[in-house]
Amino acid sequence: MVTAKVWVLKKHFEGFPKTSDFELKQIELPNLKDGELLLESVFLSVDPYMRPYSRRDMKEGDIMIGTQVARVVESKNPAFTEGVFVVARGGWRTHFISDGKNLQLLPSGWPESLPKSLALGTIGMPGLTAYFGLLKVCKMKPGDTVLVNAAAGAVGSVVGQLAKIGGCKVVGSAGSDDKVAYLKKINFDEAFNYKTVKSLDEALHKASPDGYDCFFDNVGGEFATAAIKQMKKYGRIAICGAISQYNESVPQKGPYVQVPMLFKELQMEGFIVTRWDSHREEGLKALLKWVVEGKVKYREHVTEGFMNMPMAFIGMLKGENIGKAVVKV
Ligand code: NDP
Image (cartoon, rainbow, N blue to C red):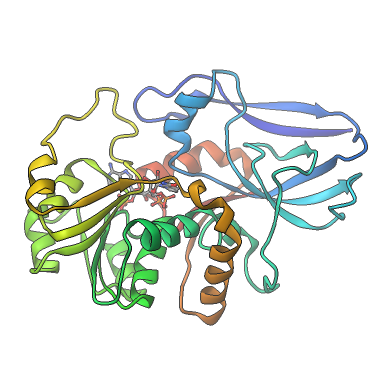
C-alpha cells in the first residue's frame, strides 16, 4: 500500500494566493488493476495558468491541477515499463495511479546528461508556447524586431532565443536587474527592468526607435498599452498571457486598443498552446536539438521539497524565478 501526499485547494484564491489557501493531505492508494501503473513525481511544475484555471476548473477541496515528470514505479500496463520517465497531468501529488492515457514519454534522443525537469520547461509546454506563438501567431521573419515581456521566465526566455535564431532583433523586459543581466547573457539585443525605468514609453522607444514588428505579450495591462502604441504598421501581437491581471479582484480598465490597432492596421491574436497538440512532437524535437547544440540556453529555479509547492507557486507569481520554476520532490 502506498501513501501519497497531495496538495488540495482549501479555499479559492482571493487576490494574491496565500499558503493558507492550500492544505496538505495524505491518500492511501489502492493496489494496481490490470492496465494501470503507479507513478512517483520527481519534478512538479508551478505555472501561472494555475491561478486563473483554479477558479475556472476547480472547486474547493480538489487536488491542485498541474503537471509533473514522474517515474513509473510499478506497471501492469505493457506500454510502460518500470523505471521509465513520463510527463503526466497528475496534479500536485507525490504518487498517483494512471491508466496510461495522456502520459507522454520524454522525446526520443533525450541525453542522460540533460535534466529531466526541462520536460516541464524549455523542452516542454512553455518551450512549445514560445515556438508556436512566434511561428504561427507572431509569424516572425528574419529582420523583424520582436518584443517580449516576462522575458526572463519560462516562456519569455525561449521566445527571445528562438527569435534570435530566426534572425530577429530582440527586446525583453523583466522585473529585476539580475533578470536583465541574464537576458543580455542569453543574447537579447536590448533589455530593461520595467519596475525601475522612469517611463515604459521611453524605455520601449529607446530599445527600438523604429518600433516593433512582433509583440509576444505575457503580461497584458499597462505594459501592453504602452507596447501597442509603439508597434510598426501591420505589426503582429500574440496574446500569450496576462499575468498582470490574474490576481486582480477588480478587473483593470482601459485605455482601449482600438485606435492604435486601427491606424497601424495591427493584428492581435490570443492563443493557447494546446491548439498545436498535433504538432507537439515536431516542436519538442526542434527544442531538444537547439538545447543539445547549445543554441538555446536554459535556467531553472528549483525549489526543493514537495512540502514547499505552495511557496514555489507563490514565489513564481511574485517573480522570484529566472527561467522555469519547478519543484524537486
Ligand atoms: P514565468 O516563468 O515567466 O513566471 C512568471 C513571471 O511573470 C514572473 O517571474 C514575473 O517576472 C512575471 N510577473 C508576475 N507578475 C507580473 C506583473 N504584475 N507584471 C509583469 N510581470 C509579472 O511564467 P511562464 O513563462 O510559465 O508564463 C508566462 C506567461 O505566459 C503567463 O502569462 C502565462 O499565463 C502564459 N502562458 C500561456 C500559455 C498559452 O498557451 N497561452 C502557456 C504557458 C504560459 P518579472 O520579474 O519579470 O515580473
